[in-house]
Amino acid sequence: MEPSSKLRQLSSADRLLSSFDHALRTLSGSHSAGRPNPAGLAAETQPLSEQERQLSGALMRVNHVGEVCAQALYQSQALVCRDEGLRTHFEHAAQEEADHLAWTQQRLEQLNTHASWLNPVWYGGAFAIGSLAGLAGNRLSLGFVVETETQVEQHLASHLERLPDADLASRAIVDQMKLDELRHAQDAKAAGAADLPAPIKGLMRLAASVMTRTAHHI
Image 1: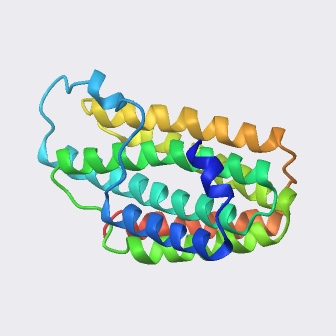
Image 2: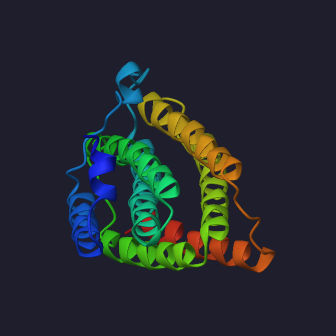
């Protein structure tokens, strides 16, 4: 039996426990990637200077926070979703985002820097927001996915402009992440996502700005 099939047969209490276990694994950095790390095909053309290393580390820490939040968002939406097909959609997206989580964690270690100390806060906040989006109904929940992934894709594009040219490993990871996020947004649109009101989109951008500015340093 497929893992997703087993999960769909769990009781509400079992789903909650499974979600809690997933949160612990996310915050402990124990997720492993199902796909090869894109950085494995890249190597720095020259050693990074200390300034470049610090910049790459800060940007990849922000990207890692984004993946921590992605796990919380997809897990919470899957938890409250009553549509089995849509739940499978969220679970599949979360699996791909887990690759991103593992890749960024590995790159942080290679850059000799740390993940955000506030990851439990980011996860908890994202889980609450994802739950509210899921309870709002399928179309709005998918619309939330579209807007989130669209903003993340734009954010990653800006990081590609800021990352040092010599940091080919980080650039390879961010480039693949960007492609995946765009596809996730397109998949959610195809599944029937509603277009969110402009004020909600603005609030999402504001929350993302606060998170990224904070995670850049802490």
